Image (cartoon, rainbow, N blue to C red):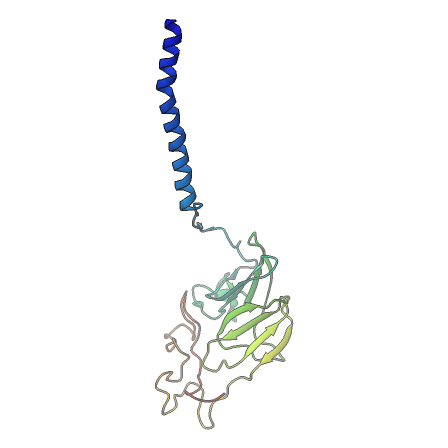
Length: 227
């Protein structure tokens, strides 16, 4: 009889605790549901070994455009004239003044692992390459469009994925009659004959900017030239 009473007493004591536990669990579930799923913010980590070093002692200049195609290949547009001749591209001089290095081509294509797939671009017959190439986009068919930010860059260029020229939209700007390249027009107070954001070349640098610069100075059209 005593055992029966003890069991009954224990059951009477545990029943409220069990009910409280169930109620508490239900409340936590309701609270979690009302708050919605936890969203983890994206976290980006720099990969210092990407891309891999360019072959043939080539250097990557200041990047002015980047796009990713349908194969996750990364296309980079860079300036090839923003190096210091004496300390960076001595091998590219005539005659060479150092064993290293050379500028890369204007457009570089890398695979997801950072390997250079191909490089192309620059002035060639059939189109007017920008004085300061700037901006790269890939359309739905995989063709590559390139623009420019120089004072005379008044066109867009379209190339196939492997760098074959397709079309040029617009024509290269031309200076007004009687105006020499680099000479500012009377009303040209904004540009002063130099592309926006540029200054005259520093002495001893052969018209080229330092690391991280934006290349050599270039002539520009006057405001409202309607080119």
